[in-house]
Structure formats: C-alpha cells, structure tokens
Length: 208
Image (cartoon, rainbow, N blue to C red; front, side, top):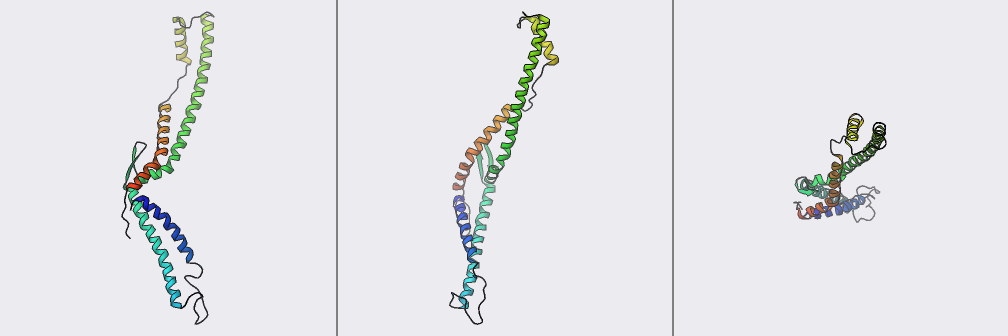
C-alpha cells in the first residue's frame, strides 16, 4: 500500500481500537453470577467465555495491525529522500523540521531585532559625529568653508580617523537574515505538498 493509504488506515485503526477497548468494559471480560446461573444476555457460560476471549483478541489484533503499519511507515520515512527548500532530507527529517522550524524562526527574529536596533543606534551615532565635525569645521575654516575643498576634506579625514565610528558586521547580517528568511518561507510553503506527493508515490509492504 502507499504511505498515504497506510496513514488513512492508521486513523481508522485508532478509532476501532478506541471502540474495541470500550467494549472490554461493562462485564465483557469478567463478571459474577449466582451459583449455576448464566450471565445476563447469554445462552450459556461457554458463549460468555467465547465472547470475552474474542473481544480481547479483537483489540489485540487491531493494536498489532497498527503497530505493523506504523513500523513500516517509520522505516520508510527514515530512508525515503525528498527535496524541500533546495535541501535534500529524509521524510523523517522533513517531518521533524516542521516542528524544529520554530527554533529557526526564533533565531531569525532575534537577528532581525539586533540588526534593526544596532543600525538605528549606528545612524544616530553617525549623526552626532557629523555634528561635531561641522562644529569643528566652523571653528577652523569659518562659516563660508567649502565642504568640497581640499582643506575641509583633510580636516574631515583627520577628525574621522580619530573620532569616527564604523559598523562591524562579520556575518553580513542583512544578507544572512534574507537567506534564512527565504529558507523558512520556502520550507513552510512547500513541505506539506512535498510530503503529500512522496506519501502518494511511496509504497510499503504490510503483512495481512
């Protein structure tokens, strides 16, 4: 059967197991009667014994069937390869990644926040440096100083070499954020479709 069919049977089996388990109650497995009497609703003690054994065998058979199918699916998922967001991984890894992707999103949110906060502070600091440079140029060169002149450029270079600021970005955070964002969005938008196609195409052997 295909994995899709197997998953559908698992859902059906879970309902049947619940129903069969419920049938074990209500004196189905054990009861008491007056000496020599037959349990209510039965023609003989033998009939009661047969039904009790049958009820227990039924729920055990359903559980074993579910176990066999689930094992075949797990083994298939561990070896079947799929491509999601340009990454090769097993079906099991893709299923786990659906849960694990939340960690990637949390890290990305932290990176985005750090980038925006630092860039904002950097721009504010740059503005303050520019204010100090303008004040120095006014004092040294006067009000009519030409900012394109060699004197102003020499003054600015000297000042910025002493008191300028620079942004340290060893991981190229803007590009890294974009790369991670693209992966998360592509993974989340395609993983279910990829798994659905894989499940419909992949067959597993399940003994009757």
